[in-house]
Structure formats: C-alpha cells, structure tokens
Image (cartoon, rainbow, N blue to C red):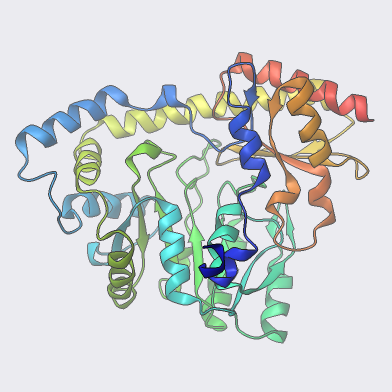
Length: 393
C-alpha cells in the first residue's frame, strides 16, 4: 500500500522528537518542550456558562452553519487593537492558526514552487510545506533583533519572486524576539514593492508583557499581507478557533479551499467564543493571563541567570511563550536533549529542529517554554538543565 501513496510521503516520517516527547509525558518529567499554554489559566467556568447559554438559548448551535457573524464582529474589535482596520467580510474563520497557514499555502503555492522564510522558523510551517516539495529561500535572523530585512531585500532583488514570505513578528516561535516598528514597516513596504504575499502569523501578538503592544505588520499594508490570528494562546486551544484577515477576493477563494478540507469551522465553539468575548470576562482573563505568564517568564530568566550566567546567553521575550538559549558552539543540543531524557527528566526542543536551512548556530541552541509550568517546576527544571550543561562543559 505504501507504493500507492503520494511521492512526497515516501520521504516524510513522524518526528523522533515527537515520539520522545510523548514517552516523556509522565509526572516524573518537567516539560519545557511543547508550546503549551497553562491549563490553570483557562477561563473554564466562564466558558461553561457561555456553553450553557449557547446550548439552551440559541437556535441550532449544533447544526452546520455559515461563519458566525457576532464572532467576526468580536474579532474585528480585536484587530483594531492590533492596529488593523477591517470589515467582517475580510475575516475568515479557521480551525486554529495552523489551518489558516495551511489554507493560505494551498492558495498561494504550486508544487515545486518557491517560498521564503527565516533560517530558523516554526516547525509547523515547515510541515505544511512538505507536500509541495518547494524550494525554500532562507533569510538570516537574529534571536534579539529578528529577521534581517536588509538581506531580505537583497534576496528579493536577485532571486525569483517567492510564492509567499512567512514571518512571526511578535513573540517569534522559537526565537522569542518581537520585531521593531521600523522593521514591520519595511516588511510591509517590501511585500508591496516586490508583490510578494506576506503571511503574518500572530498567535502571540496579544501576549505583550512589557506594556508595548506593537501594531501588526498588516496595519502598515492592507493589500498583500495575510494576517493569521488564533484564540489558542489567549483563550484555549481546545476551542480550535483562529482567523485570517485578507481581501474579500482572497476570502472567496479560501472558502472553496476550506470547504474541501472540513466544510466549516465548528459551529458550537464559534458561538461559545462569541458569547464569552461579548462579556467583560475576556478583558479580565487577558489581564490575568499576562500577569501569570510574565511572572513565569521572569522566574525562568531569574533562574537561568543564577544557574548559567557566563556559560550561555538567552533572549528576554516581550511577547509569547518562549526563551531561546544559546550555548557554547561545541555543545550539541540534540545530544543534550537525549541525555536529559535519560538522566535529568527535562524536555526541551533542540534548535536544529527549527532550522529551515543550514544554520550552524541552531545546533548549539534550544527553545524553552515558560508558560506551561508553575514557578516551582521552572526552578527545578532549570536547575536540572544546568547540571546537564555543566557536565558537558
């Protein structure tokens, strides 16, 4: 039967890292690996009230239905906070941000086409690309300042036009940086000047910890920038709700592609989310979430400084859920990961799994998630990691 599968599947396989992370999900392990929000911060009681309201008082909440207009109006208000003015007809609902990126890739990319992304980028985007077997143009990036916009412009001047450019401007996964306003403006300008569709993946834009919520790239260029948002990190991933903001002509094409994938986004969760967002509970929830995650971020940074000062370097993210740790170049993060599983019982993501190209620095770096664990586990996990690193020094 495997001989009958599509050609691209012959070389794809389940990540060994994912297998190891499943094996290490027991209580004896401390997980800094997966990008999980903290379950204790989910607004469970308020969502239960909204679910009860929807199921008992609304008409046909369990039936197939078009996108729920009240939810799109709520998203329209959220987008205004990201500096984006849009109509509800420009908002397209998806089953999470991952589906949004996948639908856009299907719309923009031909098999064997060319795409552009940073040399270190989100693994989910690389997985989406696999069936297309594309040529990938990579742009240098920095854990602190982000994508090298000068180099990006040089590549656009010399190379063929890519089908799209993929970026994560706020709380970058995995590097943790947040792009400056100036770089956001230049990205928007370059996308328009060179007519390259830009996919702006923004699941962490609302998770801004230092009183500086920079506007989305789309706020500087309405045409040709496709904004992808998600409720997974600011509400709960189990709702499987995300959205795309794009021109109406693109929305029409997206609806055709999505209908072939899953017909429509879950009607029930759309209505639950809309009911919840219509109440003051969301603002209180978001403020609580920011305080909790900022506390966990600061806790991890404090213990990294106490344990690994002078040995490694790491980012101080103003958004998101991740800290990128760089170790001396002779240390291999994958080797450390395998030993950590066996001895220290701490999981993390080695940097090379995020490499879209040949990036030597990634092999001696790793990503840590700070949102999932409470401060006590963060302290213990960093102490175990420091023992591991010091043994290899």
